Length: 350
Image (cartoon, helix red, strand yellow):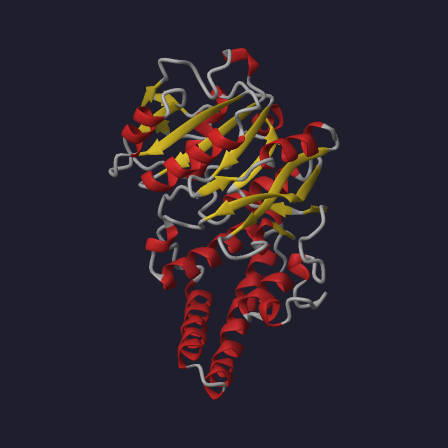
């Protein structure tokens, strides 16, 4: 048992499984330019596909890969050891969560740059070289993110967004940013009417694929292990933004299969976890008064969302109407009980 490398409490009982052939692309240990850190939990199939994509697309770059497995029971560790002997594996005996697992790997990273990569992501040709060039060539930048997308879309909006405010969250809770995606006011969170087709500086990138300077992340203490699911990347981006600019790169696509772990959670719990994460973000970075105001915003959204469900019903969609009514109930319930209830935060890979 050894203490957390960043001194925020907690210990790790992990079995480190170093490769017999070294690390990454099997170049010398001191030659790695990028350290790719992947946290996995029962995502063996997706993890193998992710590592295969890195092998195809990153062969020209000196790199290393460190996989931190959070106590998987689906053979993830064995699959990596058998098929990717150059990958270093840290096999935890329990699920320590996304933030703590990344912090386990961060002190081991030898690269000048570190890429936090989700196991349900697939690298695309040229993406790693492009985001590396966009960070290495611009010392004023603290982080770079690719154009993360699902299978049948051009852009997943959350990969290039503003940090949360009361207005962005109200617009999101009421679906205004989806109903009016080109509105500069309603979709202000996503820099509308910008559509992600050009590079730009943003306030927040997606933790599913985030390239940073290793020493800067270490200086920040890595991920804050006290923050909950859905807040880890926002919190890190907020702190990185104090060191430099964050850059979204449109010409660097990355396929993301999105929330393999969180798909297993009940819808109501997922919504409550998101509300709680945003509340804690505001409490940490904006103060308690701002966080209390957010509770009022959620309550207002719940009250407004209920009659909006009838508009969906009139429009002929009972399913969407029920979804709105379910959300209205969740919002009001969470706002009413927010000070008395702390929802259990499952420790998922991110």
